[in-house]
Image (tube, rainbow, N blue to C red; front, side, top):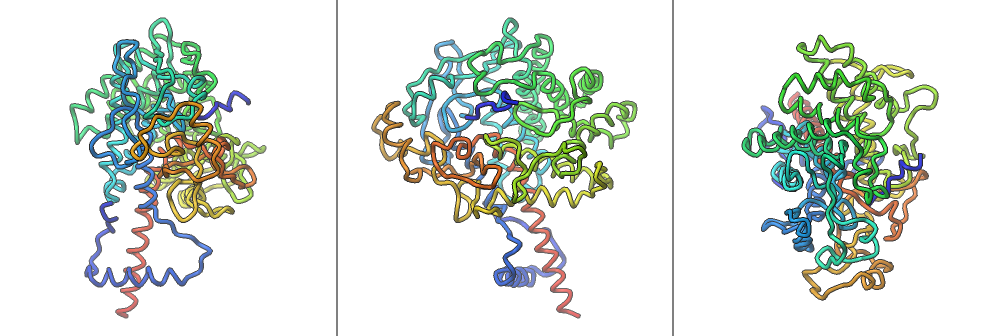
Length: 533
């Protein structure tokens, strides 16, 4: 679990159809595949389809509650089956956020928002890769829990368990003996940030389920609208109402970004003018058009919000709001330019010697995955609208932005000085000692003997052996500012993984797989045309 360091500031992958006969196309592609084996290794190509499939497995490993019949991560078992019982509410389900067993509402909701956004942007690419069903399952596992946790219009259960008691124990989730006390926000104990992010998650998910499951989509939208109204009417930070969360997921940015974020997603989901008016009217007061931000996280939503709002500029019906939307866009482009090292006065995101974006030492990869997502989606926006990005240090086209985003994804997958994939289970070399209770102890399926709090620390936490269970698809915290990485279980700043690290990657892996497939087909076509001359 991340301590909030801000306080210190396979269905086969289908190719695009062509007029070339299929047999000839296959022979051509086989030739290209063999040819690439003998070409220079200075440019590495990664299997983005494999990375996509593995990233979705991670969410199954993080499931809390009663596991479904089609659970693919078989070293996990049922866990936390009485969550909420003391409070008289069913809170079974949802996700553990990282390597422990607390269910934190704010990062869980952000995880679902990012999974949904990625699927909205790259729905066809995910479907072409044969992973749409698993993507929707990952989203629905979260939204099903949010429905349970939203027990009345002005009540949302914010957390189950607490970090302090949880950290005394090193146990498998199936053996859990720590407190499962639940904490809520309500009219007397507000949490506008948590209500806003959960509203955004459910609104975004409702867009995805609109065609395939319209009843469920409508239910999600109903909850999203109620949560937004609750968060807006009873304003306050959730970490004031739920004090136990402060050491882990404190809301440093406050709640104004989440309220704007929720309203933006509700507008996208409903097309109701009232939500856009909220974003326009409160843009200045809530910092949406004022804050220039260089990170996008589970806590700080401004950059994502600004990018979403700026995309409305391309629609004629929003012309009357163009002045405010241009202000949103200006701040979004500040963020993009800062990632590209194109701002003035040193207001750029730092990079490691090998070129990885670097925000801070604790779980830096979360910043890399979210930045890569925003860069890629903005590149698409510029391409689709035939525009360029103007930064202080020059004008940039969409291809340059996409190329840089890809460099960050390729760094994650192994194109780095350590020659290591930071996506666990991908490639020949990856972290083997991930800071994760369940993965680090022999599976409950193999050893049903109870493992107590201290027994886990004594026998497993301090072991230098690789984890007995591979936490496939987890994006760990990653290397330090010098590109160095130490694969040790107690090195939690670098070896712990979180759901919100991997969530933005799902859509990106599908996007880059689609690009690579198209490139291969185009190369095949070019070779075949040349051979007929």
